[in-house]
Length: 247
Image 1 (cartoon, rainbow, N blue to C red):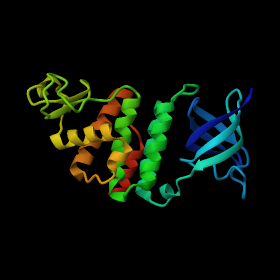
Image 2: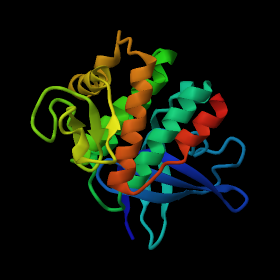
Image 3: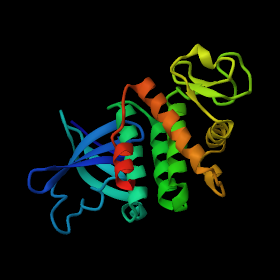
Image 4: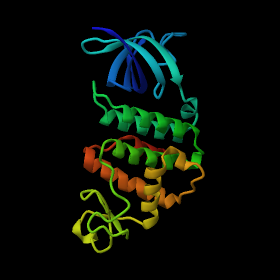
């Protein structure tokens, strides 16, 4: 066992006993860590502020056999706006859920950490109509960080720049002539492919001033949901909850 410092973002919080909390933390250098924040649920507890989902903090942790222990913590960002709006909270929860799925204990995943940090800041500060587009930015760049980014610039079957559909199995867009090569391929509009290229090329700053059509944002979301399920074998819970809340 040893005492060490790390920077991390709280992905999930679970109550433990009468006063403690277990924090699931994505750290910059050490991957995912579970740590106990003793007394965090008590009134005026020193660790109460840092024991909130989405909190970005510098931690002093005591490593243990199964769980680490939070000895000290200093908040870097707390993103209060994420708790003030249901859509922002839901999208931030979705980002944290995906980060939890792809992160690993003990693995250095600096790219994932930086992406989650950028994604949370984006959802907290962006104009509300662009919150869903911010989720598309995060999904695309998560796939890029994992080395799984699909192609949206050329047909993966023949190299044509024409766009008619998308194949999760083949890893990108298909032209009309190649669409039949995958019976499970889905239709995709050129405008949606262009939005995906923009979000991959421009980064978070590229969302400023963007006015994407709602149809393209939704169509890209459906395509990426299928691709994430195909690649990761995982269907996140948060989008279903968001649809239920909005209906």
